[in-house]
Length: 254
Length: 365
Image (tube, rainbow over all chains, first blue to last red; front, side):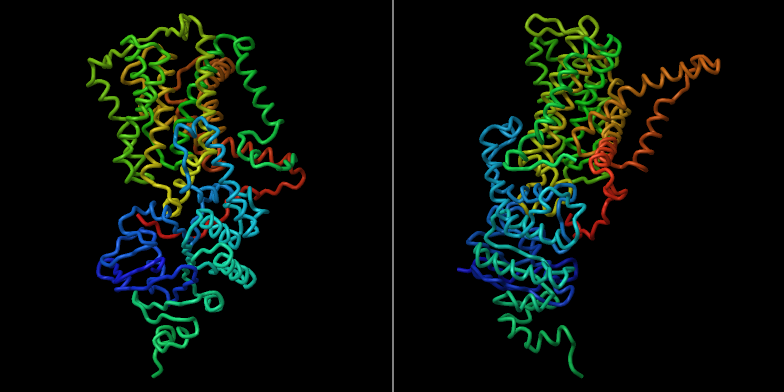
């Protein structure tokens, strides 16, 4: 059984069909990329998986659970973490605090024990810290640990967002344009990190990306979308040479 | 600059950075405990007033400063706390039970009110809570059999284990009572901020979408924040009632709500220090104005002419000045001054300048 299965998912905003009977599945342990021109509905697919939108029809299943039955805040509990296209970090908190929010789904303490900061809360905090430090080491964020997000450069914010998603200890990581706005060197770093996330941590990655170099470098399978519908699905090379994809990007030869 | 060499995760989890900082706070606490010996009775009363305002400020700070939900209605919760405390006392409940209950009751009412308010954001939430503050006036009048209506209620002193605590009779004991509550509330607040719940408040404040994606239940978090905020405010209200001795429907007016919000903005949103700095300004400004008015009056022979609205005019000017020149409040200014000396001579003028924020994901509301 696949880790994530979307079946016949349709989403309409009024008269506009943003996602049109889309079906695909992501296997455990693979890097799956979604590509397509602007407005193809790639980020909308992410927002559907995150349950920010309710699909008009279709089903989304993750790891045997029906995702459509959970609240948006319940998705993380199953092990789905995500980043955002336009960086949604907690601006007025430090990098460390941001990553610790990522540990929220592992919270066992309650209001009363936290008000008194009981030994069990302390133990939980130490555990959280250990996990978070592993991720800080993994993504080389040591220098920024106690810095406020508001003062960090764009490239670092991108990495912090990936780190925060990793801090939730996910099974599936959704990366929404991880390389947008990054320099060539930063993109290369991101490429190795995505590779390591899959190989060392065993996390399945689903990403939306425009940088074809990154996509063909790390992904096992690629889904090309246009106008909310599936154009092609296959290995990066297959998709890149698919006539429908070329047509969507470049138009028809007259 | 003190550079702290961290060798242990506990150094980040403990509320104080190092022994030096801890000793500073312990000295402050000792000085505060000893206040009755170095302050005359008038200023001790004023200091008590400042502490009561600080507790109320801490209450609002949880909601507005840390969860990002503006409230213009916290005077209503002050009133609920105050009336609940006095009504329980009149029913014969001992103070040590009535006081905590008054706060918890206010918290429960606050959390209940929060549920319909959850769908509102920003200015709309402010309007909703403003309405609440105005309504509270009428509710107190209408509920005359319980609240005493326009005539109001009176409270003289309370007993704790046979010890009479009275604002006028034993101001020293009353001061210590308020100080104990202040310290307890502050410690609880600190604990909350270093635990997952406090971090989820900050997460909701800064980005609801990503808080949700991290597994934070927005509605629940906001409700809890409202509840805690109102409980603390209720305790401040109960103490305010004891401090004033007499109160009616007009004691906790909308003006108090606005003053509370101004207080935390002036002090510095999103910091515990800010609530205290703001309380000092709000608490001492009326005294400062009346003293300086006398002084100026004596200088020009105008004597003590009452200038209507002087206090609010000055408050308003201070608020505008802060929003224009120091949006981070007194605490923000303090941080800048401290950094200047710590880094001397390397402080740069734009060190605290807000970075241009990048385009946010379209809010999924």
